[in-house]
Amino acid sequence: MLKKLVLMLALAFATPAMAHSDSKFIKGPNGGHIIDAGHGAQHWELVAAGVELTLYVTDSAEKPVDTSGGSAEGKVLVGGKNQTVKFAPAGGNTMKATGDFVAAKGMKVIVKTDGVGGKSFQARLTPMK
Image 1 (cartoon, rainbow, N blue to C red):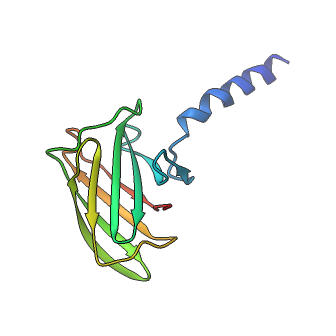
Image 2 (spheres, rainbow, N blue to C red):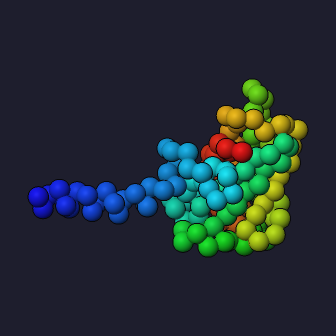
């Protein structure tokens, strides 16, 4: 009985730690794919609509990370074509990029930040919107 209780508690406390796993598509508060960047140092959510990508950046406690002074680059794969886009700070914890693509289900984006929140990371995302 004690083993079952310990196992149940371990699983209950492990779930929040896996909330932003790269292996699962977790929908973020803005409707996009949310992942851990930098082994959980930051959480990124990517939303795609039309020709625009919006990256939302929070810290490990889900507090907004100021993106001013940072930059990012994205490698977009959609419709069998690759494209590089530049993200620029767009106020608060957001960065935006536009490109010669139309957002579609299954698109993939590799984002590499430089100095966002004083840190630089890289991660692969699949926007959900």
